Image (cartoon, rainbow, N blue to C red; front, side):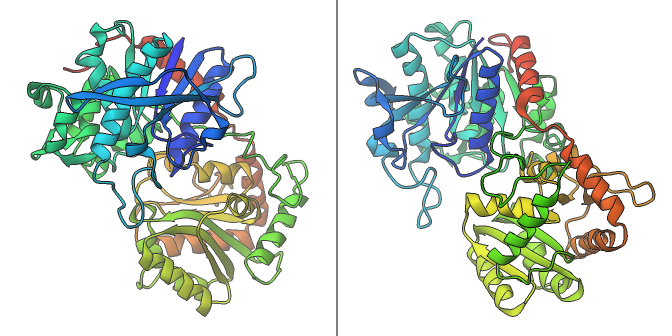
Length: 494
């Protein structure tokens, strides 16, 4: 099959979160299965043209009532099969993308012209196909920045060479929808009757994700449980009614992880490789992690790790707020060490600095480091993810692969990938709680630490059970292929 991924992010070129990992890893897995996969994304300022090949001739894109000109660059996706490489196309337009940031910068977290930037990008996707004379069987659009591709396909492009192209729209995080003033609608070049029939209207605003949900032939999200949760009011972000109405077209397919990058047997960021057959390298990673964060080098103390964005979605208010049961109480009352790597909301960064200065067993690094994120996964005994909601989550799968037991909230993809510990039988692969409260986090952490000191044989068996799980993309890629094969153009909701 010919599959085109339309996305705002793809590693190693542009990344703010798991979307970038998913698009690239899935594309490689599909190419490994013999399919012809191409990716298209904007060429942001941070993507060096020096490593790309420019296609001959500029490309005209109809947007805003006129024609906007763009250059196009191309490169092969690193890690894709040599005999069937994934081509990555970059839409180059200095006014829209020649700036720092993908969606915004600290001074302007959401660029005011984002609706026009990504309208232009989505229009350019179709012009690119014409330019290279390549028309996909499946247009796979990811999250709100690419949602308009499904609208343009349904309301016009199927009459212009894409008659046999079906569209799939994947939700990576329903909390981000691309809601802007409808004054930006003129830039789409669509008639105003389509504004309402395509579903843009959202309390007199323009909702890009909503239009994608109503225009795509099929819908998917990144875990089976999140697909169910998003059809309920609590996690539906006002889109639950649409998703319930389209439930027959809506699938939840669990993300995989890149096992070429996340593998303790071959991880270059660990001081010593390890496997289920020889776990000595995990002890070496723990020692290195303690040394890196300035903690006492005690091999017997339980070590809790976190790598996270410091945002409300990740449960940081409950974990680091002033309430009893939060991190201060945890580190004061329990025999453990706690390390965290992350960045985000200013209040939380300041609180982490304060806790690091006041607690001898709590240490934080503000920012992100690929090396440290691997060391935290390898060297920790437990990995904490108290998420308010989690569409899929990757870190819990990294943790299980590295023999680090996840402590997670029972939500989204966390519920699909972690089996709760049963202290009577010793079964399970981690520790789970339902309610997002400081007391629930405190109690569950306490339970895990108790098991570490009192049920060590069961804890070690859980480690090995988790390491035996297969979280590679092979299984999920085959599910996407099965979904693609069930798709047909214009089968979506009107």
